[in-house]
Image (cartoon, rainbow, N blue to C red; front, side, top):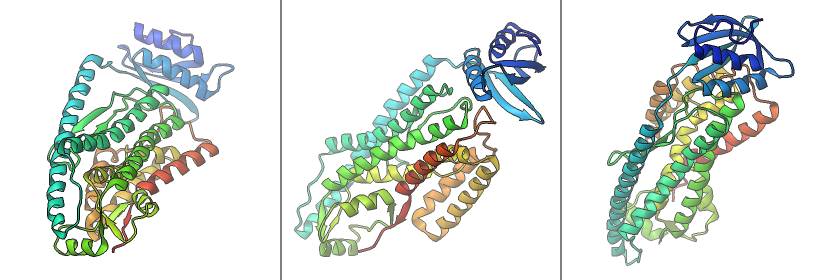
Amino acid sequence: MAQPGAGGGSDAIGKLEECLGRYFEYTPYVVDEEGRYAEYIVEPAAGLSLEEAFSRFYDDALKLNYYPILMRAGGTIVVRVVRYSPKRRGRRGLLAAVLLLATVVSVGVTGYFQIRGYNDRVSVLRSFNIHIPKFDPVLGSVLFTLTVLIPILMHELGHFIVARKTSTPATFPLPIPAPIVSPLGTFGAIIQMRHLPKRMRDLAMLGLSGPIAGVILSIAFFTIAYMLSPTLPLSVAKEAMRQSLLAEIQIAPLATLIVSALIPTGNNVVIMSPIASAAFLILLIHFANLLPIGQLDGGHVFRSLTNTRVHRVSSYVVTLTLVFASFLIWSLSWLGFFAIFAFIISGLRPHIGAANTLSTLSSREKLIFGISYLVLLLLTMPVPVPQT
């Protein structure tokens, strides 16, 4: 076995091997003279498990600007490291601030026009001698913006916090403004993992942390907004629908149907306000993000529960199923397009999983993460709405 520093062709490699020697007995296999990458045949040091040794080395390697991966090659265990260039935090922070401001403005303006459109429809509905309150455009825009952005930002913040807790290199959440083209004024936000998390448990937590925060908040906002939305007598609502002033919802997230079933409205029909509609759409967006496709949040969780081959097959099957369903159910056409987009962007390559490719979830972890994932998927799943 080699001693720390052996095989190093640069100061960077020397420091890296010094760290490697703390946790492993190692033999250099491939070492780039310029210190860009290296591979070592390893065995965990005495007193350390393989997972514990790699976990500690992972943290040290990142501090030296190396991305590590642990894998099995034949009958040997190999650590591969690749050098990376650290990003300048100042520029990314400025970009995040600019995008956040642009997104707030975009969502606010979108909300303003949504409120104005809603008020116009209310004016027409008042011709039925039914009093329906209008929204103040400014206050309504603020409420719309909060309903949209809080779940989205908390979703990404959940990812970011777990990434920090698990030492996974990740960018700060970047909001995406989308004026005019999106009914919410945004395409959400993204957080980019610069390298694989240490182990499968971290991958599962990263995939679940965002949706848990976003779904809970969206359900809470929808519940409040739904309770405050105006109602019409069923006979009036049917006449308004006959005149194309109102339209029945064809599909809805299961969580919204549960909420509507728990809130008594008598023989009245609820007219969802723009605030309730925003929370409604955020839940549908979460369902799309929870699909077991590629690098979506659902893809990360599903990969942690299965393996690369099963995950890859799932990406194909789910994408094709949703494309087929979009031809049968027009209201699901957006989901078919999203599935294709997600598959092309992140599902073409195999999902390796974690930097420790040998790590697996325990039976207890599979049960907990699996149930959590299934509950989130069911709560956000679009289902047919009983028609009046």
